[in-house]
Image (tube, rainbow, N blue to C red; front, side):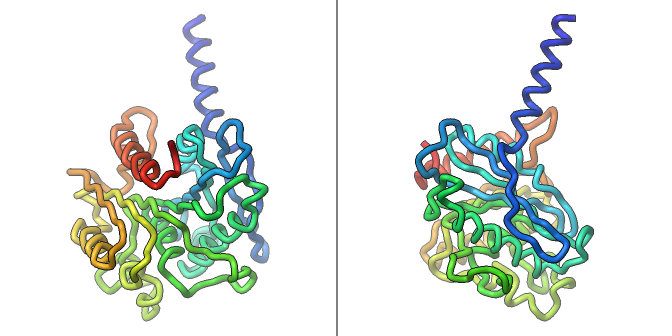
Length: 271
């Protein structure tokens, strides 16, 4: 009985640890309210580096809870970590362009509220998985798709990128082309890379059916030719979403998180 009680308390503690410390509204669009799920480090006083994650789901679905484990982990290392909501097709019948607008709004909101959040607005990273990885990359390199209600004088561009199997090639041979049609040249991060792209780390499995390894290597090559920092970690035999936290075997969650930590540490975001 004592063992059962202890196990229950441990499970409850783990569940509690994955819950955000606060949830703030960052955008209202018609009937839709979008929220920021915020994880704070202990003894939050002086401005800290921050990161915001965007969930995956093909711009059609998904949930911020996907990145709760990453957020809590980074908060324990001293960052303010956030998971943002954004509109998706299954819930709001929006096209991917609106998703990009919401991602930019999220970053602008964070910077506008830097004092209240106790963050350093000049050390703000963006991350995400799959379509969420696209959104993070898009905020860094896509000039179009700004929400009319945003204050565009506030930069929507993050200072670093953490991308998990991102669908960042949306051209004729990439992901999502049929949904964005003739606008792909304005929408695809791969085709809008210019010198000055923020430092970027990418994680990808060799068996990912959506993003070929060649695509990731090409993206990295373009960034490096532009003189920008680009790190690429490829995991043999892994499929799409291999990096997610799961109950049970978390080998690849732990491996990718370890590399993410080193990347952020090299930038001075964590000690």
